[in-house]
Amino acid sequence: MIASPTDAWRVFQQGDVPRDAFAAWQRHAKQFFDAAIELERRGDALRVSIGGAARVVFGRTREEADLRDALAADAGGGLYDLAERRCRVVWLVEREGAQDAKALVLAAAIATVALGPILGDGRLLGVRSAREELERLAAPYR
Image 1 (cartoon, helix red, strand yellow):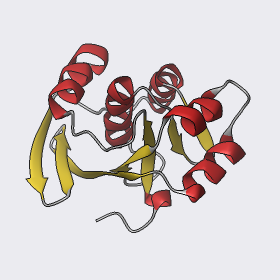
Image 2 (tube, rainbow, N blue to C red):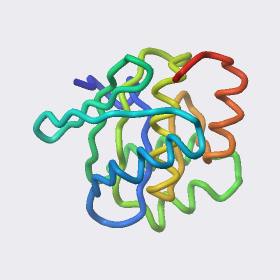
Image 3 (cartoon, rainbow, N blue to C red):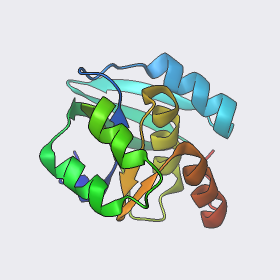
Image 4 (cartoon, rainbow, N blue to C red):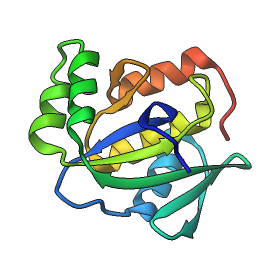
């Protein structure tokens, strides 16, 4: 399980209730990242496999700490405003450090459906900047 938000990418989702939209996540992972993901449900958390590695994913109501961290990470592109005004849900995607490309692909695929930014490592990313980060990492994730 994810010990703290710093062990995860946080993906803001528009709306008030966590919506498990796995089928859409799966389609978007394939369409935008050429990655196949599979699902295993475990109570409230989901275990999502990508490239032979499993990551825990779960959704919860947004907390004040999420907004505080997003504000600190905002580079002025409007992503904080989106998170604050429209996103009352946060999905946490377990990761194995800052270089975990598989976790970032999962977070980005979720973000394409959730229509919110991705928060981690003191950065607030949109899907495009997440793709740029994946290129920079040049790490396999399929």
